[in-house]
Length: 129
Image 1 (cartoon, rainbow, N blue to C red):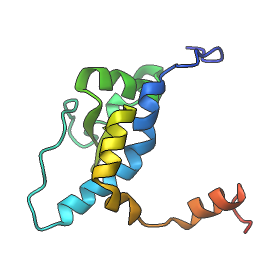
Image 2: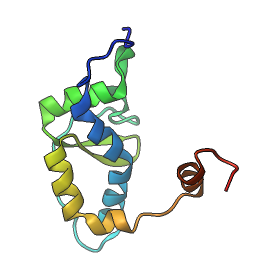
Image 3: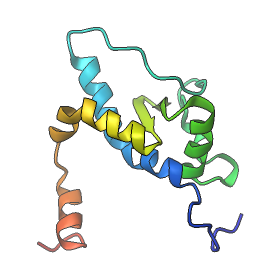
């Protein structure tokens, strides 16, 4: 599939989910480490042994964000994926993202800082400060 002439709104609904996918795993880790029982997970696709839901991202040449868009149409704007051993929440609509970030703002405010990411964002390249 050739993607050079992409339509402006091509898979834009899932872009938010793709961005939040890595940071949402921190929320699950914090919930798992708390003394309270974790809340039930949002709906998500069935899992396979060992790889869990990794097979649903980018299978048969599909780009991961397009796979997420397709999954969000089936499971809703907030869904759960188990990526290997990492539980992940995918948020794929602006309204759900706003609700999610407002409800769990302290989790995202207290996330660890990664030196490589800080260098990339502050200078545009690694190795320079």
